[in-house]
Image (tube, rainbow, N blue to C red; front, side, top):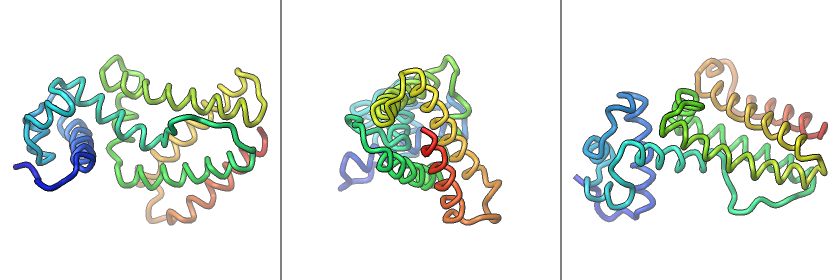
Length: 197
């Protein structure tokens, strides 16, 4: 039964989360509009109208929806001062860690399907390419690096962020350190990283 009185954005959020949950729990092959409608508490016609009906379209929608939130892609990247860029990246990492903790499915999907020739792999690649292009531009303009250097720094940044998010949600550190201490150490590491740009 569809939840009434909700705005479209809340439904889209719930649908995207349900898609990832279905793929993680039951596998991509078991994703269907019917199963999704039941899990997300929306009607099947609503799913078809606002997202689509194929597994590829559904999974691509969810990865792009959550991937952009996790990557915190801005509409238009802008150069900044080095100090602002560094502080902003630390802030974005903190938000990404919290977001990954709230939505661990996106990290699980990322590491399961990244680089695969599937619709999920293509959706991940699309979001990553958008993120990379924005960061390459920002790093090149902010730190006056070459294109090649900006690309390398961006790869390091992507690897650090995704690795740290994965490590945090994997549970290896939970119970050993608090999120605040983790963020404090990660923030200090990022400050050192950006000081060398």
